[in-house]
Length: 87
Image (cartoon, rainbow, N blue to C red):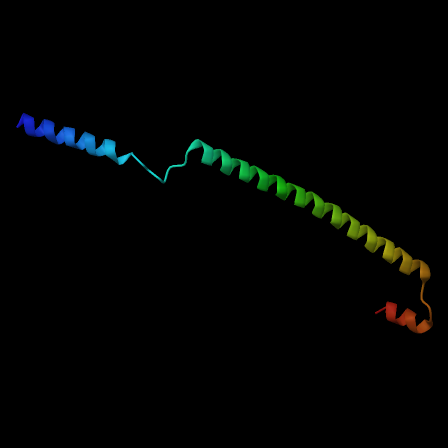
């Protein structure tokens, strides 16, 4: 009985030891570093795009204000134009 138990335990240990070999689902350190670097680059790109978007938004607002100021300074050309701008 002891020999059978010992053989079963030894077989179980060997089977568990063999399970960990060649596990292709695990990432090695190089893969993790490459993935982290890629995520860092994407994060930096997103931050740059957000900054550029804010600059363009500010420029668009400034252009709209300048256009409105130019329209206000010019005034209505005829009384009919004055009615149109009031709509």
